[in-house]
Image (cartoon, rainbow, N blue to C red):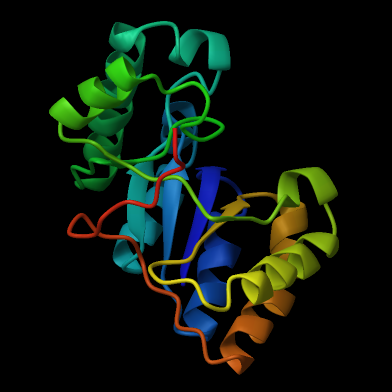
Length: 196
């Protein structure tokens, strides 16, 4: 299983990582440019802890990010160079704001691909941003149960939020008791993507 945390880094990065360590889990963090500058120590902690650090835009704004091929590539490039400057890691693993459907056109996908970026979506949406309470854990469990016969990676979308952190022990406890191992995404893997 692949736990992914969007929109960080944040004040919650360190406690999230501490929880992951407790369960011997690894995760992937898709981070916004300004937040990388705001919380450089959180990024360094992710790298030291062996998590995967990835890109999640500069603006996180639908209209700005998806305006053109140029806007997408320039945001990803800036995001990547900031991450490299702060963490020393040159990561091409990325997730577009709000996921690739419906905004990533064929032309955009090709441009991102041509630049060597590896675009990841998810197949379980915790809806933690919407529920803002323990319901997101139940939502993940229900979706996991529906995917019992799924082949390939299971990628869970979470966010670096106070409410997510508050109920994360419950989720990790469930996953651990069910025998799930949480690994980090790496560049050798075929990304999970929505069907356009």
